Image 1 (cartoon, rainbow, N blue to C red):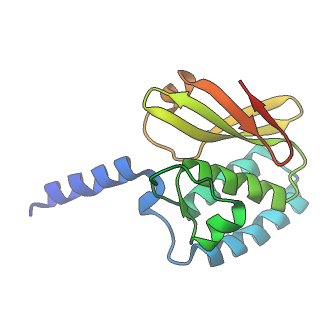
Image 2 (image 1 turned 180 degrees about the horizontal axis):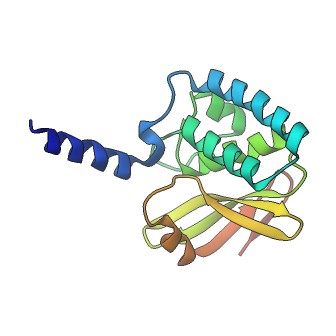
Length: 164
C-alpha cells in the first residue's frame, strides 16, 4: 500500500470517527488524575474559560464514542463502569456529572437538539451568570454549522428539565 493511501485512510478514520480514535488505554485511571488536576486548578485560578474548556475537552478525549441500538441513556457511574464508552448523550451526561463532581458553581445542562442528520446531545455551560456556551460532545468538522441550524428538543441539569 502506498504511503499516501495509508495517510488518506488514517485521516478519513480520524475525521469520521471523531474522538473514537484517541481514547487512552486506561481512561478511568486517567480521569481520576485529571479530576485532581482540575480541582487544584479551580482552587488556584478559579473557574476560567480555559479551565472550563479543558474539562470539556478532557472528558471528550477520555470518552470513546460508540453508537448504540435503541436509546439507553447511561448514568455517570454506568458510563465510567463501561470504560467510558457510549454515544453523544452518554458523553453529555458524563460531562454534566464531572462538573457536578468538581462543584462547578454555575449551571451545566444536557441539551438535546434536532440536527439535519438526526437528534444529538450537546452540553451547555453557564460560563458566568446568564451567559451560556454550547459545546459539542462529539466534535466533527463543520459541527458548528449543524448546531447553528439545529432546533432544541429539551434540556436538563441535575435537578430540572425543560421541554421545548
